Image 1 (cartoon, rainbow, N blue to C red):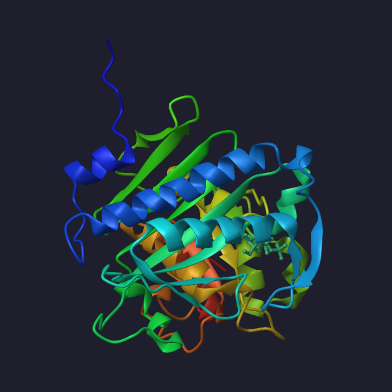
Image 2 (image 1 turned 60 degrees about the vertical axis):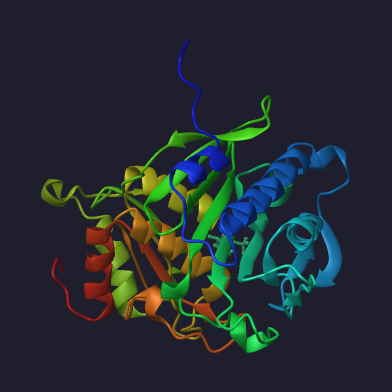
Length: 337
Ligand code: FDP
């Protein structure tokens, strides 16, 4: 009989992450996050039958219209992590302020920052969606948590990962010891290890960017994208363009097959669109752990000192050589021009 693949819990038992507040507490938290993903996968599969598509009529802290599924996903994260996890603070794209969880007598050494549903424009058209999470430690567990405790540099993340809700549901995460991908077997109700130790190719042949924004970009960004379309066998050009509108889905493709994703700064919006603490940082940790890179164009994402919870950053992420080349264009140096 073929050997059964490891579940997340079996995998973590065999490869224990450094846990705070007692053996296995990070495993317990990742397990609770796994439950969030299973619940979301179930609900997303039949959202069109549950009157869960469309808008709530509200606007979130980013000034964006809230979709019913954004709200449902946020509530699922908060409910599950408040009850089961060992998280003392939860922060999300959908909540202006963090939620602090107090469980007397129980250590809550972690803080979880998440984008509950990534790729919102895909919700109503049955296209891929994701969720992204970042786990950091409460620096001083003897003190009550406050808003500023959540502002930790990406290098301080203890674990990070995402769910991809596509034809299969996948959980991909790192605890700082490589990146591992699990596929949810809905019949068994478990994530099973399907992609151990993912290694990202050093260079790819795919770029993912919303090219409708071309005229809004600074010149270096425009020249870099132009360069990818040139015919040049030696450098694998032209690259293929693949953009799904879901950061998780686009980066997942690159993680397995190589290439580059960009949500760059714009002339009139240099900070870009994506959020540092719960989008760029966790995706950067995953990608770096798989051998790739993530930058703003000027600096490594994981080295950014955050100033506010919902801070935005330009994000250029993917295969190390592709990202390095993009940086050269963005710095105004033109290796290939
Ligand atoms: P969305 O706002 O639809 O949730 O998280 C931000 C994000 O999606 C990314 O997933 C995606 O890559 C990008 O924004 C899409 O933005 P554009 O529609 O501007 O291309």
